[in-house]
Image (cartoon, rainbow, N blue to C red; front, side):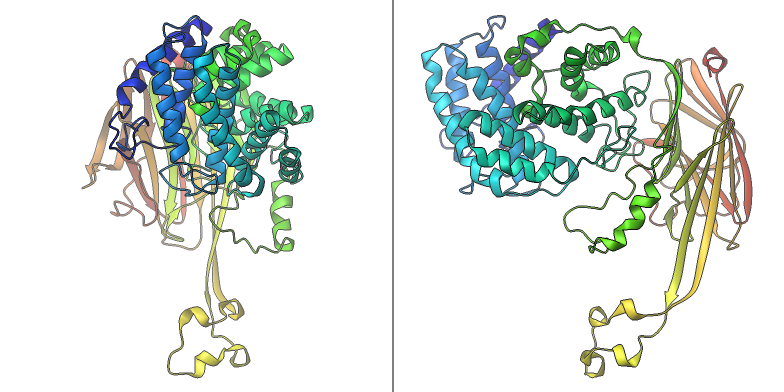
Amino acid sequence: MYRQLVESNDRATERGIERQILDPESRYYGGTMDPFSGVAWVNHTTGTPTDMCFWGAAISNQDSKYYRDEDLLKRLRLASEFVLRHQHSDGSISPGWTNYHSPPDTAFVVVGYSQLYQLLNQQDWAPLQPVLDIMRLFLERTIPVMLTGGCHTPNHRWLLCAALGFLHEIFGIEEAVQRAEQWLAEGIDITPDGEWTERSNGIYNAVSDIMLIHAARLLNRPELLEPVRLNLRMMVYLVHPTGEIVTDYSGRQDLGSIHGLSSYYLPYTIMAKLDQDPIFAGMAAWAASDLTDPGVCSVNALVRLLLEPELQQTTGTTDAIPDQYEVMLNEHFVRESYVSQMENVGHYGRISHSRMHTDFGAPVARIRAGETSVTVMTEVPSIFALRHGKVRLLAVQLASYFNPGYVPMQQMTRLSEGYRLTGEQKKGYYGPIPANLLPESAASDISPWYLLPHQSRQLTHEQTFRVGAELQPTENGWNMHLSGQEPEDIMMQLSFVFGSEGELTCEDAIETSEGHYLWKGGTLRYTCGEDWLEITGGELGHLAATVREAKLPDKCKVVLVNFMTPFDKTIQISLSPSMASKI
């Protein structure tokens, strides 16, 4: 893997060279242009620090064709000057997409920049000194914002701890350790089954993992590695056979999008070496196969491997990874007990610039049988997703007009075979505010709605809507039994979302203006290559093409089943026999 990283780093170096802005009159002089926006930024993903890591790793590595390349060194110096110029006076950076004067985004750069600085500082090459001086000055100027800055998402705390640890290692400031201890005193947000608050398998799990690995070493807190182990063990069961990560229930922006294992390469490699764990080593090998370059600034794998050469010797095989399993994550996590304590905290469920993530610890079932991979989930729009060879049933979603939008399932219980999901929604009305509680504005010429004490209104005519779903495996697929009774005459819509790459046929369907299909009945068949699935259970109980607040995804093939309450409905999914026998 090391040799592949060196080669891909050289290719990334060349791409960065092509994008560097060398016009002295440009405000971005020395920076590398982000191909998405056409602007040079100081951030850890599409920004100049990432190209600097590629260049610095190449210059420092005897195995690179750019080893001690003086032209590349000049470019590196220009880039470091650009980064320093675009640092705000308070020491922070603004990544470009949002989060202006952002302590966490500054911390991402600090983590990557610090490792690059340490790598360059190991080189016995005098021409590097001007670059080192500029980089050190940038890092030094971040100290105030790292010592005082806050965050707005759970994973940012562990990121800040890692950045503070690097600043302590480089500058020896004890205040950095003290600030990190304040963050760590809040406790670790992970379930016993290894799930982080944000349920973000595609992005932020790996962020929390690598940042706590750094923090454990830099702050001399080896106990911080235990939650990392929990998450890495959990992730063994959250990857489809193709290497695509399960993102169907994420609480962040990776929800339903395609992500590979590359961001887990460093956590798995480091922990495989530390624990001598063959499954971790196998997952590292699987993640390595997804790497197209060493990674962004904060997690550049080649920089870390050059700093810790022993990691270059980590070997593993995917043969150690299970391909037959059925697990229910968070089955025994007492989530309701935690959620019920929110009333006593005092924030009343309100939080600025973030969200509460009350779906933390919601149960998820994962079933894999060879090339067939199934996810059953709660607290998200989708209740079921399936991969069968090349076939991708990305989501099965239940929506209603009761509380317009998708109906989330809150509970999951294991059956002798399969799972039962249940969901409940409430909606009511509110009476007049008692006269003795009205504000003075109510008697004035203008009485703004927002000045009324709405919390004092009495609830009236509250309605409760309960739905259930039983998902059970069969000899050649799955059965889905859906039920819901009162209130009557609620319009329901079940959506099947397929990958755009396959061929979809419906025996009896109406195409909507948005290119979706209202499926009346007969058999639905979706084929991709030699793999297929068939579904029965179509119905056209009403003509609504959409449900308000239930946005259907773009660039997918969507089939809709419309029905009314009360309903007691069975959907049958059959899989192509070449793989169905493995279920």
